[in-house]
Each structure stands twice: as C-alpha cells, then as structure tokens.
Length: 71
Image (cartoon, rainbow, N blue to C red; front, top):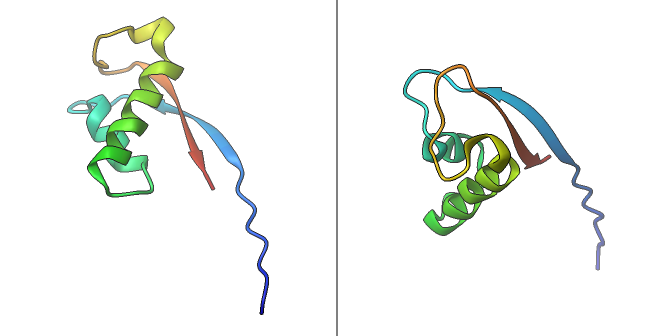
C-alpha cells in the first residue's frame, strides 16, 4: 500500500472588489468545490473574515477584503 502526505497551506489574499462582484460571485470564483453548500459556506466565511467592514451588507466596488483559501 502506498502512502501519500498531502500538505495544504491556508493562504490569505487581498481582493479588491470589482464592478459586478458580489460575495456570491467571489465565493464561486475562489471556492475549490462546486457543491452549492460548499460555495455558500465559503461565502459566509468571507463575510465572517471581513465582518468588521461589511457586516450583513454585500460588497462594493473598490472595497478591499481578505479571502482565505487552501493551496
């Protein structure tokens, strides 16, 4: 039996919101899964990470947010 070691690193990146972006579209762009529940969880993770800035609102053009992803 072969054993593999998988190493993932959590990367925090700055993202500047562009025209037409929403939390949902950003989550769809960066979420590594395509299950709607995964994307929804990822979207809410972005909201929680940036809650001090956006609260319950959506994002707006020019806003800089942090997006975490595994690589």
